Image (cartoon, rainbow, N blue to C red; front, side, top):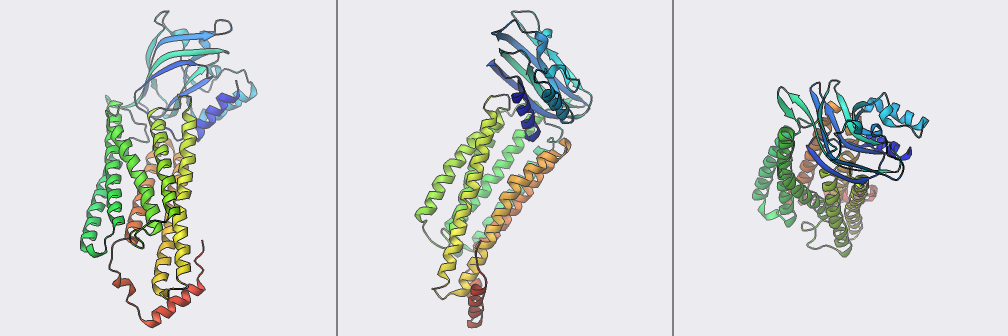
Length: 433
C-alpha cells in the first residue's frame, strides 16, 4: 500500500509533464491505489471540471466504503507532507490528509445504475496542482469513464494551457519564421557556391525545412489546445514532422561526422551500421514520444514508455559521437603519411570543434533543459522551452557555418612556410579526445 503511492508521488516530483487538454478516459478494472491524471498551473481564475460516469467497484473483500475512493488536487508544496504521512502509517488513506484539496468521493455519486457525477470546482489559490484519484479500498478494482477539463479563465474565455505554457504558441510561431529565414539564407549561400555544393548540403536544407514546419505545426497544435482544449488534428502533423526532423537531425550529424560527400563519396561498413542502429532507434523513440504526449500518467505503462524514450535517446546520443571520433583519428593517421599537413590540420581542427559543439548541444538539450523544467516556477515553464529553442538555433547556425559550401582554394592556397608550421602543429598537438 505504501510503495506504489510513494513511487507515483516521487515520479510526479521529478516529471515535467504538464497537460491541459480536455481528456476523455476509460479506466477498466484498475487496482492502483493512486492514479495521476494531470498536472496543471492555475491562476486565480482556475477551474477544474470533472465528469464521472459508468462507475463500478469490484472487491474481493467486504463492500468498500465509498468515502475511501475519490478525486483530489495536490500541490508541490504539500507533496512532502503527504509523503511523511504515508511513511508514518502504511495504511493511511491520502483522502484523509489535511494537505490535499478535496474534490469529491464516490459517496457523492448518483445512485446506481447511473453512478455518475459532474461538477466544476474553482481554484482560488494560484499554484501548480496535480489531479489524482485515490483508491483506499484494499483488494478492489475500479472501472469508470472520466472526462476532465483544467483551465484558467481570461475574462470569459477559457485558456486550456497551463499558466506557464500559455506563451508557447507565439514562441513556436516566431521561431518557425526564424528558421524559414534561415532556410532562405542557406539556399542563397548554396546558389552562390554551386561548385562546392555536395549532397550533404541538400540534406541540411531539408533538415531546416523539417525544423521550421515542426515548429509551425507545434504552434498551431498549442494554439488550438489553448483556445478549444483539443488539437483538432494539428497534433498529428506535429508528431509526423517532429519524427522526420529528429531522424533527419541525427542522420545529418552522423553523415557530417563521417565526412560523407564532402570528404569521401561513400560510407564505410561501420558507419553504415551506426545509421542502421540510430534510425530504427529514433523511430522507436518517436513512438514512445507520441504515447507519452497523447496519453498521460493515468495509463499503467506510461512510466515504462518514459524509460524507453530516455534509454533510446541516450543510446542514440552516444552513437552519433562515434563517427566524429573515427574521422578525427583517421585524419590524424593520414596526416602522418600524405604530406598535406596544413590541409589535415584544418580538417582536424574543424572536426574537433564539431565534436565539442555536438557534445554541448546534447548536454544542454538533454540535461540543462530538464533541470530548468524541474526547478523553474510553474509560471515560467516557457523559459525552458525558449532556452531549448535558442540553443537549438545556435547549434544549427554553428553547424551550418562550419560545413557551408565554400571554394577549397580559399583555404588551401598555402606556401611552404605555412605547410611547415602546420606540420609542427600536428606534432605538438595531440588530437585525442
